[in-house]
Length: 251
Image (cartoon, rainbow, N blue to C red; front, side, top):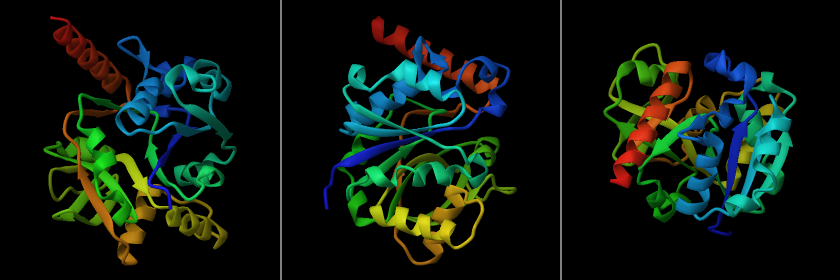
């Protein structure tokens, strides 16, 4: 089995919470200090994680995404596009649509609407992810509201014990981010879940099911800035953060 990863970016959703901005532009194309967030994500995959092949799952404003990114050559990668016409099946369905491109590789999943700045994510590629079914990026020190908008994490050392998406109550200050490295077997198990008659699967809940079934799911401690671009205020905050970081670097 190859230790080379393939990138997977689910970008099919319509960005309801980011309206009115998302009426005119795909949420992944929101400009953060002049660069679309999708481009930032692709650069992270390529420059920090050594990924040179990426599958982008489109849906809403598919043509705009493809017109903006092209074949990926401007960013040093090869991009495949797959259109998701079944958004009601959960974003796990978008992940599953990348399965034909795996070729035995692990998949690195990152969402199009999550913003990362000055992180240690390059260390993820050097971690022991191949020894685990799933590796999840987490961060300690998050506030309760942010965790409730993402997902909560319970852990014991490196081992993740439980994931809860949009939790009603929060037990600690650990936030889970939608950056995952998943083994090829995850796609087969996800496919089996749908084939078993489940109309919709939420990916975080599915990973939690794998934990309860005894699979090894590990935590990668992400350092640096992170925001989920899930509303207008978070988009503005990310833009301010990126501009400040750039100005500081230019001094």
